[in-house]
Image 1 (tube, helix red, strand yellow):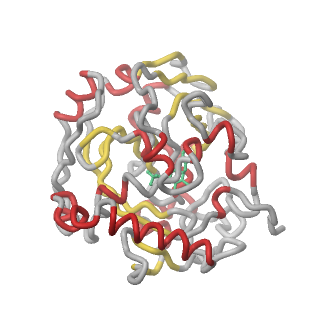
Image 2 (cartoon, rainbow, N blue to C red):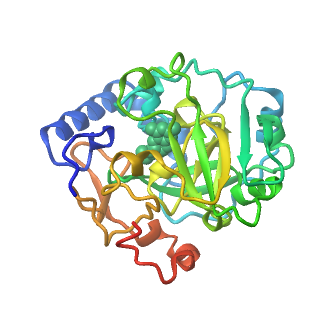
Image 3 (cartoon, rainbow, N blue to C red):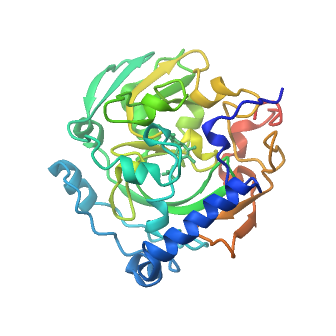
Length: 335
Ligand code: MTE
């Protein structure tokens, strides 16, 4: 079934429509006017061509434990074969519908989000339910840099140096029961702070989920930072998921609840348009979105006149690592 009504995800840079051109023109103008020369000469951008990067200065007020964790991070040494997307693009071209529908809304509207204190409720089928502060969550983990591709279902992509720790290490601490098959994540629901929750038509709060074995995969991570600094609010501070082999909408931001379940979680996009956004959402160039191709993607930043198109890879280039999770499954049906 083709969903006729438009959802926020339909603001597509992949659609060749006047809206797209308009949005790209705005991006182009913004790039030229707002951070024009800086975008070409700032240390972050120069670092983009290298495998490592210059940490971006962090002037945000953050709790001491987080500052200490970030300072003690394990720096990435493994070279990444593709250019990093500059920090300016990573932190201004966002999807975070709680703060608005346009790509630059989150950067403009999320600045005053209250990040401290922050806690996460853990419940459902596990031995260690409870309300955990962010400090509790982070305490035993060493933060590490991980450079991953991020492929949005809207057919744009980035390469981002996240800073975080394996999701599996956290899940193990809560001791899921033998009957737990899924883990569900929920974003903060606070319309006083999140203007998008007052106006746009998604059913709030934003919910995502993974099969438990997906959550335990070593590539699945929880991020608290990016480019060597704490996460800016628009990127999902203070705690977000990063699942690099799945479309970006699985990488839920600003998590306040983790719940272990026996049944498939009712996730936001799969509920709104189940024929367009499946629960698995594995990046798959062989399964097109009903209204656009998933065979290629536009790598950001790129410009109005130089869109940086590239072929989309199965599981976003992580097939060697994750394909075995889906052995025997029909990925056209379980998309
Ligand atoms: N999480 C919440 N709570 N709300 C959102 O709107 N958007 C998703 C995902 N996580 C979203 C979210 C989508 S569609 C994408 S592509 C990524 O966040 C974008 O992450 P980024 O803005 O850090 O690039």
